[in-house]
Length: 422
Image (cartoon, rainbow, N blue to C red; front, side, top):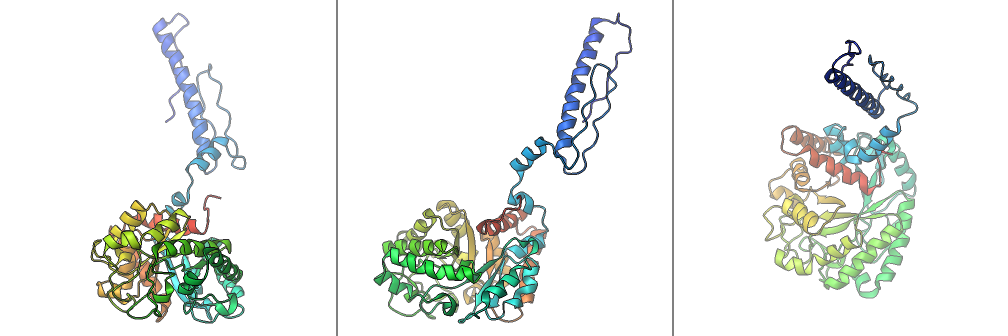
C-alpha cells in the first residue's frame, strides 16, 4: 500500500509536536518508495513508474528498470521460489492427469500413440517380442510431438530369458535365475550395461526391471507363479546384491531402472494378471521380501513398481491401490522419494477387487502412486481419455487432492531430470 504524501502547511513556528509528525511522515514516505521499488522489481509484467511524492524533502524514487533488464531482486525471488511443482500448479487438471499415464503401444507401430503423446502422456510402454530395426528413428519422431519437448518415458520389459522385447536389437540376457546362480554381481552389471547402452541408442530410456522378488522356485513363470526364473534367487541376500548390480548396469547404460514388484511377489498364491493373488504375510515379507527393495533404495533407485497382489496384514486392496503399502510403508518407512509406478491396472486382480481401470487409476494416485499403466488391446486412445477424465473428475469432485496430482506429475518430470524453471 502507498502512503499518501504528508506536507506540513503550517509556518516555521509550528509546534515541535507537528514538526515531529512531518518528520515521521517523510520517513514513512521513504519506506514506501523503497517498497514500491521492490514490488515493481518482483513483477512479471511491464514495471510501473515510481509514485510521485509531494514532500519536497524526499527525492523521487528512481524509475524501475525496463522489462528487458529485470531487477536483481526479481531474479533472486524467482530462483528462490520456482520449483517444478510451483510451475505445475498452473497447469490444468487434464494436462496433469495425462502426465501420470503410460500408454501401451506395439513396438512395431509406435506412431499409434502419436495422439496421446501430443496430448501430454507421460510415457509409452512398448509391447512385442521383436523390435523393428529403425525403432530409434521412429521413437525420435514420436518424441518430437511431446508438448514443450520435455522428454518422454519410453518403457519396455527387458528382464532377460523369456521376458525380452527387443533382444534382436540390443542383445539377449539369460533368465535372472541363471544370472543369480552363475554370474557374479560384477558380471551382471557389466552385461546389463551392454544391453542398456543399445537400448538407449534405440531411444528406449526406461526398463521395467530388475525383478527383486525373492522366489527361487525352479519353474518358468506362469499362471500360478509370477516369478520362477524371473527371480535371481530364493536367497534374500543374493537378490539384494544382484538386484542392485542389475539396476546399476542399466543406469551405467543411461536407462532408468524400475525395481519391481514391491513389496515382493516371491511365493505368491497366484499370478495377479489372471486373478486375485496374495503375497506372503507382511510379517514374513518384512524379513524376506523387503530387504532387496531397501538395498535398491539405499543405492539410489529412481523408480519402483508396486504389485497388484493383496498383502495379508496390510489391508484388503491390491498393493497398487493401497495407501498403507505405498504412502505409509514405501514412502514413509522406507523413505523412497522417487517415481512410483503401478503394475498393469488391466490385471484381473484389479477388476476382482471391484475397480475398472479408470477407477483404479484414481485410487492408485490417491494411494501415492505417480504413474499408472494398462495393457495393450482395444481402443487405446479411448481408454487413455477415460483414465484422464476419471482423474480430472476426481479432482473436481474432491475425491483426489489436486496437490497429490501435482506431486505425482512432479515425480514423473523429476525421473527424467526435467526442470520447468530453467
